[in-house]
Length: 132
Image (cartoon, rainbow, N blue to C red; front, side, top):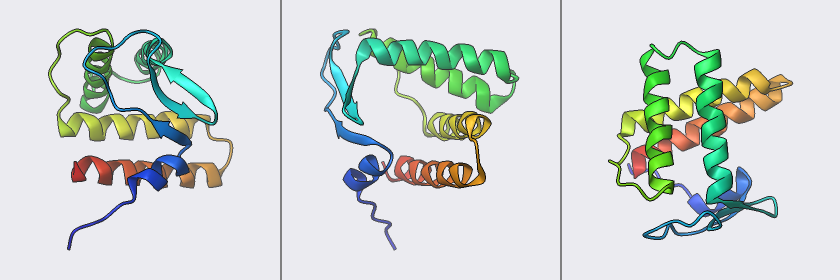
């Protein structure tokens, strides 16, 4: 039985009003997505990637596979947004990245309800990765 997920509604559920199709080459001002009325540009995404890399290195054992693979994934994204050629991330990298970001969100969660919502988002992202 094939699983069917309404990706448009899922994107809205996690706060994305619009996700733009990626161009061949990025400019710093290219809008990747709109989240809660705020346009996320390539330059803002690069800042967030840099922050995530620093946060992971400061708070986790990067010798563990899931953290090192997440860092590789972030570096691949960084290269792509800077218009450098890079390989596509492997599926296991994406799963590790979802797991690590779930851990980070749980570290910042204020209550159990938020942790449960984070867990549901993580589950759906992993399903989407497997589908594509």
